[in-house]
Length: 346
Ligand SMILES: NC(=O)C1=CN([C@@H]2O[C@H](COP(=O)(O)OP(=O)(O)OC[C@H]3O[C@@H](n4cnc5c(N)ncnc54)[C@H](OP(=O)(O)O)[C@@H]3O)[C@@H](O)[C@H]2O)C=CC1
Ligand SMILES: CC(=O)N[C@@H](CCC(=O)OP(=O)(O)O)C(=O)O
Image 1: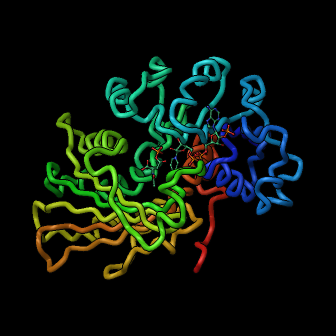
Image 2 (image 1 turned 135 degrees about the horizontal axis):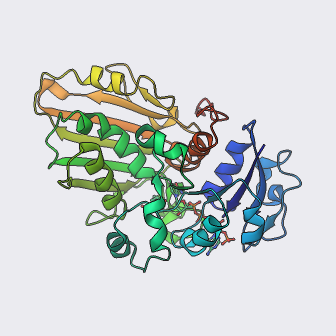
Image 3 (image 1 turned 90 degrees about the vertical axis):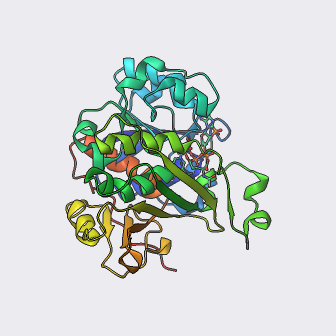
């Protein structure tokens, strides 16, 4: 059994790790941290987990206890993993960080977007960006995984075949994406109150969202070119609990390209990317609670704009499910181990 430690067990991604791991035959949670809820049993806070973790108690983060685990997930706000990653890695740990701490290779760029000094500069180059559909080989031998952000996962998987196969104009990429409220975490915020959210829909971060440099870094990697890609990224907040819907626009170099075939071939062996049949609609409810990213390919009126719609659950393929997918790859397990879930309907 893989002994799992989770730092930040009371947040939405931490609790989602707990939920998903109830279904994992080869991993067991042995340490789960919370500073605020230390000493309390997991089901006391999360009754949905009664019967699964009745003897598991939250404890304050302690590197010695974490070092006794085979893998440590950081499900914490950015800045936290940085503070202890060095000591843990030097102690032989394998770390899967769900936060943004190690996603951006250019430390100065990270510091600009996150408005703080990076706390573990020397470990940034060690980190492997944990998008299995792009980095599977590197993930196998990694000891520090930077799990992709929720918006980046959907947007990158939607653009990847178009960029890698050089099918589109890479200077005018556009992504309009909407996230459910759990994307903002479990901490109380006025903007996330039901009364503020419900029956309303808004864009935010239009002038600059911290996921932009992360997405552009990977789009540039996909292109195999040194010329930086530019993306217009507009995130939105939508009144639902879970889910991301991204609509991507790109101008085709050749409008006779068979886009449906391009996507089907690109993802034919991917366990967690489902290219829908031509003419389908990608709906968030079809991926709720699953580790799937579903993609619908469109080319309206056969003109030169590709419109790709992508859905995922921000708490599974967008974070905790993808983190477990990374763990499976790191430990030589079947990548899908413990990650087969049908979506919740309605
Ligand atoms: N929510 C989402 O959809 C996604 C989130 N992410 C990223 O994953 C990370 C976790 O997100 P989410 O679960 O939403 O966050 P939450 O705000 O819901 O939870 C944060 C957790 O971290 C703990 N924590 C906070 N500060 C510290 C600290 N200084 N040291 C140790 N533990 C701390 C909290 O517990 P306590 O304070 O009691 O210790 C809590 O358990 C974030 O970096 C987020 O950006 C990535 C993709 C999607
Ligand atoms: C709805 C909402 O607020 N979403 C968050 C992004 C989700 C996230 O957690 O992003 P990281 O993994 O990079 O931290 C936001 O826009 O900041």
